[in-house]
Amino acid sequence: MTEDRPAALAVEGVVAAVGPLKILQDVSLVVNAGEAVAVLGANGAGKTTLLRTIAGLNIPREGTIRLHGEAIEGLPAHRITRAGIGHVPSGRELFPRLSVGDHLELGGRFSLPARRALLRSRVLDMFAVLRERIGQRAGTLSGGEQQMLAIARALMTDPRVLLLDEPSMGLAPKIVLSVFETFPILREQGVAILLAEQSLSLGLAAADRAYVMDHGRIVLSGTAAELASDSRVADTYLGR
Image 1: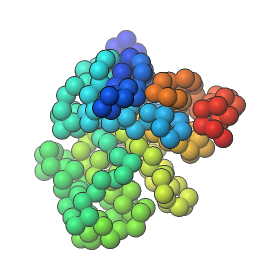
Image 2 (image 1 turned 60 degrees about the vertical axis):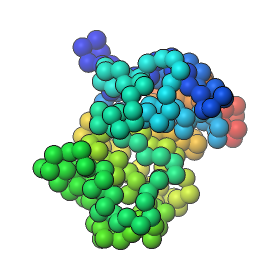
Image 3 (image 1 turned 120 degrees about the vertical axis):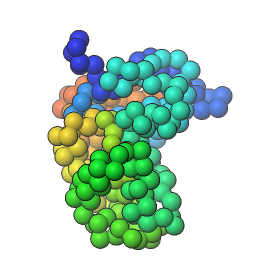
């Protein structure tokens, strides 16, 4: 981030709760355009709440969230999506009876026809198996194919920042690798990636920088290489 070029995403002092339970406590982080940043932490650390709060599915009690310098905290989720935040939830949240093509149409519904066609071509080139499954119902896809479809649907919203919540969960290593191999392509297109991961090795392998969360707070941050060699990450905060 520079003085004349704000970060793609800047979270500053965010406090958020789920019901009466305060989950996020003074969380701050930055993701620059074309950068991949991981948020690491054990189950229950607050990673999902953080991504849901950025995406507008949870309203912060305090703090600011800026997308390329523009405040978005408190906006409805659909407006945050249209502003340029794509969100891939941990549960994928697909519609089992709708086809692959239907999901892509849903994701691209706010784009002009020419742009929608370009986005569709890009995601089908990125996930070639989805082109073969274009008329197939999402509920009949394999777990890996469903994860690809969830990412493809988010990319159809034409995001400037892509939020990925535990994309490796429940997938075979070969499928995880095929999903993560799309990150350099997205970054070349200028998309910023914020990845929430419980897996230390996967998160650090995919990211330039990382933040470690523990009980709703950012407790460590640094480059992927720095955190990979910091025993506090594995021993204390991830319990490994």
